[in-house]
Image (tube, rainbow, N blue to C red):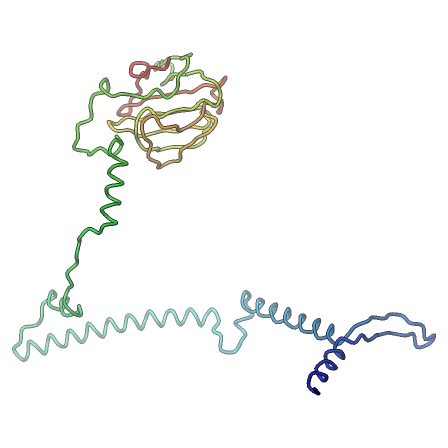
Length: 291
């Protein structure tokens, strides 16, 4: 029974409150006072010690003060160590070359045939080459079937050996249904058609392909360009928002942007659409129905 009482008494003594006061020596007037306990003193002192240790550790770890610690190399010593390591590697290579040279001379003197470079390379490889099995796993076969099903009707993954049909035999999706307010005029530098539609209307891809540009320009605003098979490139300009990024694969008729009024060369919500073949502009109205 003495042990629990001793513990309770010790705990009570730690929590007992004490008053620390400062008096004026002349007038005995109390100038400052503070109530505290031993537990509070231990807590504050311990916390300050931990914080001080952490601050000193961080100061040494992330500043140049660590170089003043005995046994820690400074910058010059580290550079010398790296240089010596490189020199040791070079010396090992030179010693290996010298040993092989001496072995070759010894073989010639004793009448033996020096080993060729191929034999040395074979001897340097430990063990016999292992046979590698290229059998398809079940997971690999399932993944291949899934990819083949997804890309079966994707025109952008046709084999290069397949013949691309003529332009008049290609079915183009209409990028936007609307009114063509300005036609293709190559002599005036207008290499496409302007199609008026309500703001926010969805713009579609005319064919499958790969996005080669998706971003902002000062004159054309939000612009997206798609590379198709048959050396065809389609351009969609003055959009309010782009739905695809550069490098993405696009299927025919997929949504790629929204109609807007972005850029300096625009007077209202519309889509400026261009169609290029082998670096030359084409009149889109000859291949696509917009209305």
